[in-house]
View (tube, rainbow, N blue to C red):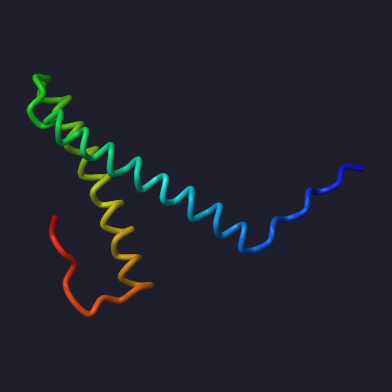
Length: 84
């Protein structure tokens, strides 16, 4: 019979999750910066590809807005967020 490995302590689980989340945020920041630098909206592509890329960017933007809204839900602000 196979034994289940012991679950790490809660503090360790939180540290691991936080590190993964912060790594994902760093990756997101780098990816967005690269997309801006490459000026993806100015690529020479067909209209169909341009529309597909626009749709994809808008889908990602909507997901990011849901994530940002979740922050507000858990950590309400007393002032408006700062624009970059």
